[in-house]
Length: 289
Image (cartoon, rainbow, N blue to C red):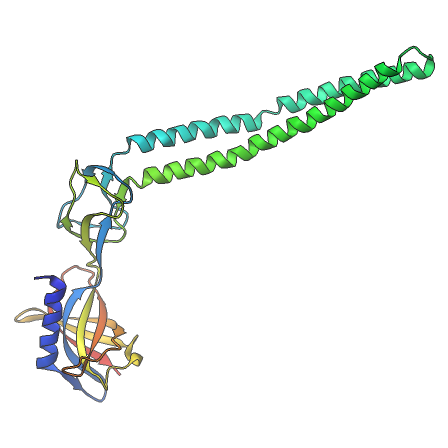
């Protein structure tokens, strides 16, 4: 039977049998420990699974490597993007055409100046057509400077494009690695090396054990939204003759009233620092008013 369904049935039974005890200082009811979070870790890209680094029962930290897809094609694309970026940076630093255009302009301007001065000193020593040709050459050299600077600026802007392409290639490569999105315990491995996976397909299932939820029921007239955030004291039965006390907080009061027994579902979250608590354990909840 599904664990969540089992927990729900247990809570309903507890609510029917135990009910709610009210005092001047707190509300008391019976409850059951349940999982706070179950995580179905998906593949983020399509490909062949080449490695699964964990097995059921392993306790893992956030960002722990869990599995890996074949990276061959993604690595080639990343390397190509790096090469393209390096070449783009090299071109963006090369101002040789600008300097050459500036030098050509200096030469053309100097020739035009000499021809103009000679024409002014000695009439008809330089023809008007020659002066016009030199003027055109000077203007062309000036335009070549503009074109060379434009090409250099374009090359510099291309660096941004190739940097973005490299970031995209690195992101695609990173998607081939599957990491733990949160701390927890691996409870089921659904895919194995050699299998093909699609984006969004569950590779493994894990549960968070550092925090747990205690679910119980209160009478509708007592279970109001004002209880959210209130301190709660939880006594958990570990064995028939042993229990543990833990403080927590009310995190949820259902807006729905059970149509049969008139009870309202309440959640209390608690820390499970030493990982000694397990879902399914029975508990007593005392909520401060």
